[in-house]
Length: 493
Image (cartoon, rainbow, N blue to C red):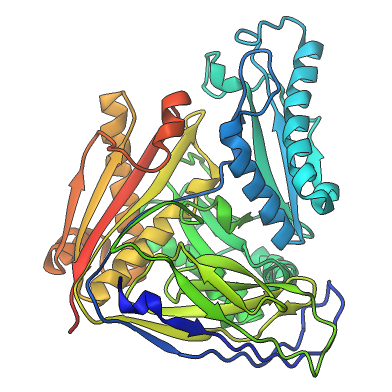
């Protein structure tokens, strides 16, 4: 067993704070220290990790509103997400299929659709009764909405879950017609949204903002336009929140009028938000974290709080629940990179520490890692929301691995049975990755392939998806899914 995993990572949390109301953003949790601040992995290390997101669509059998036992864990994950994010509200949309549910009456169909949504509601509130007042069942949508255009599918028998954060509504920005700049209205929108987003970030450890470009060319310049809005938000909120603002130029949004849209999503709905599966060699049992909370200055602190562990280049780590009375926590599923991590401590009912604490992870020996990341999921030939963050996360990771001089293979694949569509979307996925990489690495868009080749990165594009993320679900409900596999290796230098 690797000696690194035998050691205890001691985290001493010292908090000096003043009590504040739940809706107060300026909370003084000013001093957090950890020990050790650097970890060295001294033996050969390898991991095979499948990343993914919380399942947000649940399917039902014909004329049935009973939840499948296979969905129990996923539904529990949504309940847990609501528990640790007090501003998150869940909206459930129930649907039915006139053909496969054998229902002619829209009224009876609506009743079945609502019963399906109620099944999800009851399952969550049974385990997490304290979040029931933040779950709503929608009665205003199209109950007969089809998953695929001009067809009726058994995939119509479903419940869709969406999350909104209190006090936030998505907003649009529009560029000027003649120069690469946003209309002056962006100033008032940023001024209005920045305190709301900051407050959401402070109280909700899983909240992420995505700025989506619609109708833009897919290249690095489009990301520069989107980054202008991000910079303005960061100026208002502070640099500590910059990693939680993700950019995405949507290649599937066809519109005559270009615009950017800003939304919030929970991190578990991101493609890198959850550990779907983790194989490791050598076998490890995880970290042991010892922590101590100083309540002498402010004794009124909640017993439950959270630690976010993310690499500094991407908001794609994990959130670990902590207890002020427990003192020790084992973490089994932590993807390991030779990189600097940022640790943030959250008290959702009070606030967040004002600065992240760096933790340096150094792999001293050889390592071999394989990471599978879902990129695009299609419903109705349109991207599902959890696909909005994947391009940014993967491009950030590739750039970080290149800076560390790692050997890297990038493989793009999908499960689409239409060969023409499969090839076209694989190429569009590759183009989207190049666009994000162009901005993040500051390399000309057209020179990205040569730049990758010079930095020991090989790219493979294939039409067939091998076993991996979400395959078991794909067999039962074959949505079009696309993924990127990153295989990287290196040694101490």
